Figure 1: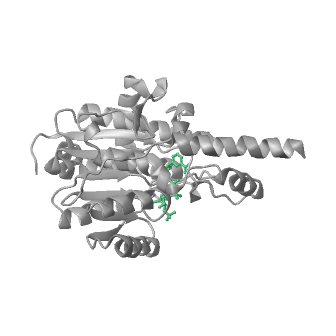
Figure 2: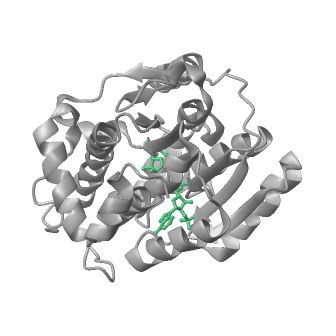
Figure 3: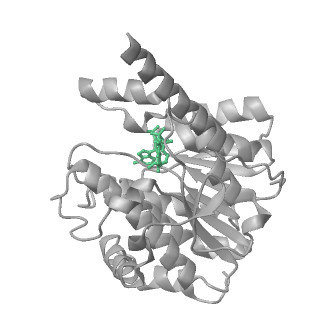
Length: 319
Ligand SMILES: NC(=O)c1ccc[n+]([C@@H]2O[C@H](COP(=O)([O-])OP(=O)(O)OC[C@H]3O[C@@H](n4cnc5c(N)ncnc54)[C@H](OP(=O)(O)O)[C@@H]3O)[C@@H](O)[C@H]2O)c1
């Protein structure tokens, strides 16, 4: 009986600590006239991020894989915010063809892109591969967003000063970029690998885009109560249920993404890693410039980036 009471007290203390230490974005920047893409905005952190940016008047593109969920998110956001400049464009990150199609569709209607938020992500418990021959989690969490971002650089240049926000995780600390697409890592290790890729990629892209006015930063949203940890195994369901009550809400989990999208405090900051709306320190692995350069060339090869696409991204000419 006393033991149970102690557990409840400890857990409640954790919850109170989390509540008190959770960072909040108090910056009141208005986003009218800004074009923003949020991937994976059908639920969880992405939905809350999109909702807040819509409240601030942004012209928002909800990029997700399910037509039904995407349209539902649009309706919900329009209803809550009364902002009608919200729309859905289909994006399935497990298909590089879909990524390229998304970019074409966006380019057909918008000239510039002010903020790209690479939020979509998944934990894949099986080692399935996509139609592109890439491990599913690797493509959803990293290679799809890699291709998307590179292809959108010309539009980001047109809006400069503009921003790329990459949602990573504290799990990046346990990641490695060795044998990334081999399938030899278990699913938790594989998730950590993709999250390390997110941080290395942000830093490398920030280096490559220095002087263009495009800022690239990554973040850890903290432990958030979303469908990310949903699993089919009973044990994991019980574990999730227990942990859920002590995690951040999705609205709290969205704060650092919102902060990086709107804050003037990070106007000149690029290639950095944030937690709780503050600059933070990414693991030593994320600071390895050689690894970041190696990852870039592996990625370029895996997504079959053409020389034309590379030129469009890194040429000085604004299209
Ligand atoms: N929750 C946490 O504690 C936590 C901690 C650290 C980092 N993160 C990161 O936060 C980000 C958001 O996750 P979340 O917690 O909000 O999880 P979530 O509620 O599961 O949301 C993930 C989003 O990604 C979308 N997505 C999944 N596969 C996709 C695909 N193939 N193409 C396009 N979109 C796809 C999902 O779409 P569907 O609705 O169609 O599935 C959903 O909208 C992820 O990058 C995650 O790694 C989360």
